Length: 410
Image (tube, rainbow, N blue to C red; front, top):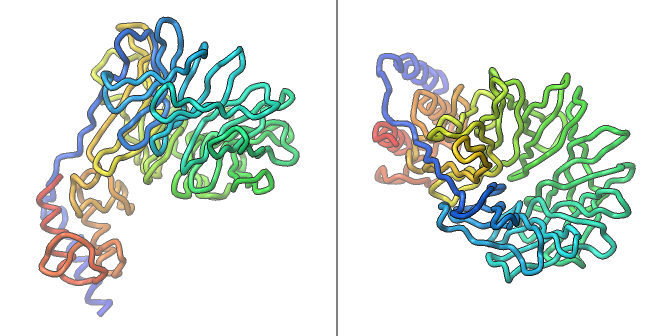
């Protein structure tokens, strides 16, 4: 049986060039300028579902901001009495970042309005800030006695937890997800990427072998993204919980790169080509790089991606760009249909790797055939009667549904 299956597989794959598979148009990216009317400067720093957060400078005052996909949807989160504010994180209908009140930078939390502001500043701190939030937790730093210490909150100032590992002279937590926090700690004068599980003692060092500098900027689903420096070159990277798991995401031709966010298997950040930063996304490998700068209409000298999320139907990448028309930084958003737009046939990425990428090509066919004959659950594409869906059974319906969806295209 195995030999017969292998012959069928080889026959199908050998026929691909003859079949001349060309179903589907690629899923298209839509570019949106989020810069609010009347603002002199804006940046989108994070995304969650269909919302984005960051700040906009209004009447010379940087103000924490919230968007829902358009410039007109802008909401001013600036709390009363603050001289400056900025939102860096968003999750579950809440936003987090900082507000400067009474000359002190204070970790802050909002629930969609300026009036909802909650002061998370821990007792005794000289300054504090939230960089990330997820599942009701907030992560950032608190300056205690002149030293930055990675910090964790659960919605109140009193809930503050000091995550600074033993032996570290400085630390910050830039990400939080699923009970994990991630960022860096300075050990023996060198900055090391790392993760925590809610306590200082749980610190795990992620610094890759040979790296002289590293940090984690985003975490989701057991993956961490950030940067590591080798030979003076900063390279975007991906981890899966250990230093040895580090994957170099630096795209071909890029002189340097940084990854700032991760969600649902997508990583977002930027890569530098010819000295110019280009916003982009990855799907787990350097070769999967998609240059989002090519989808801007022109007029931006450079772009950077800062956040990535989905609402189940679309992928959202927030970021910033420097406008050569207005001579200012402006909040930006890239959107594209999620893989559901390509149906159940979207199963393979470039290079034949498993995973959906919003396009249909030979990779999808190759990956499906491999999974189908291996009876891998990822080949479960059809239910009785050939109706699309998964039924936990490996049979001919899966093959029929895949073929129908494949040639239907995106």
